[in-house]
Structure formats: C-alpha cells, structure tokens
Length: 262
Image 1 (cartoon, rainbow, N blue to C red):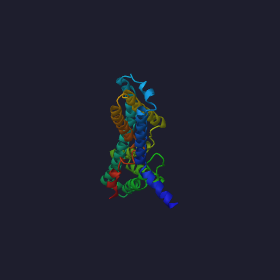
Image 2 (spheres, rainbow, N blue to C red):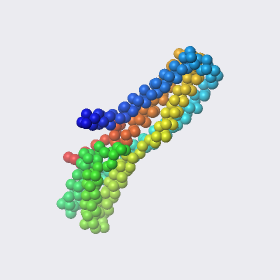
Image 3 (cartoon, helix red, strand yellow):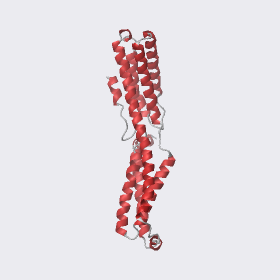
Image 4 (tube, helix red, strand yellow):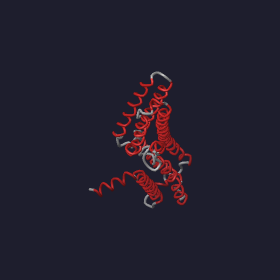
C-alpha cells in the first residue's frame, strides 16, 4: 500500500509532464500513421485520387486550430495573471496591517501582528499544497483567516471612526479580496470539449498537409514533421497549465508571504 501511495504521489507531482509525453506520442503516432497510409502501396491509388486539392486548403484547418488554441491559452494566462495579482494584493494587505499596528501605539498589544503572521505562515505551510482544482482549501488556514478578520474588526472598533481605522479596514478588505481571487483562480480549468476540439483540429491539420503533398514523398514527410511540431507546441504549452496556477512546472510561488515568517 505504501508503494502504491508513493507511485500515486509521483504521478500527481509529474502529471503535467506525463500528459505532455502522452500528447507528443499521440500526435507522432497519428502523423506517422497518416504518412504510412499516404505512401503505402495498398492505399496509394486511393490517396492519389485526392490529388488536386490546392495548398491554400491547408490554411482553413490551420486557422481554426490556431484560433481555438489561442483562445484557450489566452483564458489560461489571464487566469494566471489574476492569480498573481491576487497573491500580491493579499500579501500587500497583510504588510499594510502589520505596518499600521506598528504605527498606532494602542494596537501594539492587540495581537493583530501575530494573527497576520500566523495566517501568512499557514498559507505557505498548510494551504499552498491544496491549491489545485481537485482539492479543497486548508481548513487550518481558513481558521487563521477568521481569527485575523476578527482581530482586525476588533481593532477597527477600538479606534473609532478615524483615518487609522479606515486604513485598517481597507487593508483587511484587500486581504479578503486577494484571498477570494486566489482561491477562485484555482477552480478555473480547460473544459473537455475544448480539448476535443483542439485535438480534432490538430489531426485535421496533419491530414490537410499530407493531402497537399501526396505526389512528393520526401516533401510529405518533411511537411508532416513540421506540421506535427507546429501542432504540439501550443498544445503542450496549454497542458503545462492544466493543474492550475499554483501547481506544476510554471507554478506561482508563495515568496511574497515569506517575509512575514521571519
């Protein structure tokens, strides 16, 4: 059982690379199969009957593939930008709270700084590992977040209606908004229908390239190789982001929170 758990953990940590490997093998296999059928003696007569399709025909599936891949990639990278901004806003809000506590004498004994630092520590140690689309946020961090909000509201009430209390309220609002945006960005995922469309259009691009080069075997093989690589680059780039903005090879770091753990 322990070995199975270890293997499952390894697969989870290398999920994106295993997915990319599978995608590469799939399109190489499809491209090789198309080239083999196009050049094979058993199907040569039928394939040559398709001769006459002009090269501009290739542009139609290529344009559709490019648009679909671009729209999907754009949505993913926009979600990454939202996650980055959320982490920055959340950490900046915590920094503002700590600075305000240090600047207001009546709050130095409130324990608010300790709450803010404990929350930041829990984000790094408890919650960050749960920030993937198939897991729930850490209940421990949620509890520390509740403690921080309660301590902040108590501090705001003790200050009354003045500039300091408004600044403190604005800071905890920034933390809350950043946290909500960070957790929301985790739930974003590429729909299965989009994956089906991208794969189907990628195969269609390979077919179109092969049909245009039926009479020239060497040109067909060269064109198929280029087309396969051109299809794989955007698909593999999209696959790198399937685990979410906080997990995987290009994951967002928790470095902005480390300054509160000193």
